[in-house]
Image (cartoon, rainbow, N blue to C red; front, side):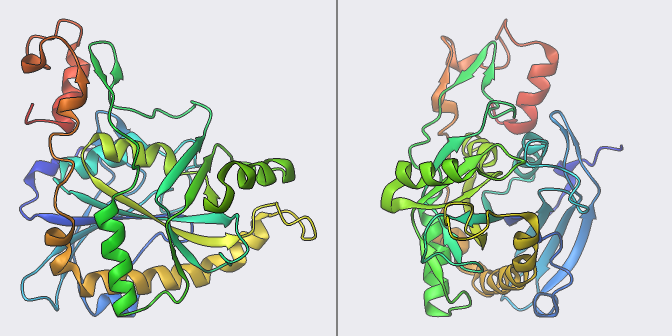
Length: 324
């Protein structure tokens, strides 16, 4: 696989959209085609952390006062060939970082843990409970000689969430958009048992909103690379906690995917309509956050004089933080 030199991109990418289950393309939307023009398709990128899960599609806006550039990446691959556990999260997030993109809006199908969060509703969670099992590489800062402890108390970007909420409120495209609450992330690929589903509700109480299989480590890796990240959760089912219903199965999920995909593209259209205010609204609040989280005695020589890092590790570090 030939490696694309992402440094040769000659435009600033304001936003990357990560498509989840059921959202593999945005070029098939007539509405989006009326406001976006495809500029480039970057083939699957070979990063020091492996290959990205899909090509990266670069679009520019056509109805704004100046062109704004947006990228799209399919989390599970164009053919949904990657399970939640096997998604190359590090490759995806590192490639987005290398493109110097500061904002990610990530769509994901979820099961609802609350009666009023109905199938085809959307949720903008503000918290995560991690139920994954350590099978996925979940950090760029977990190697000998490069140990970092980022703050993850607020796993999602508050200003990015407010940006999405405010523009949907003023020009609503998602009729039932729930803001805040806990997103549980489980390992999968099996769905929850009834006992597990009921336990999640007890764990989260009134704030328990939904559950998926892909928020971790995606959100953690984005935070480590100082990227504003917000997941948009698209409800497909009620998980398995409603004892009078059959437990969730793939047929139930699939029947709501098409409607959710249509609504996701409507939401993206709304984002594109307001994209010129994104940078000013969200900013770069995480800038230098990771460098200041590195635990090493000689912080001024993270790469050059670090006797613990081999050449491969230095290559990885240079790919995600060349400024160091």
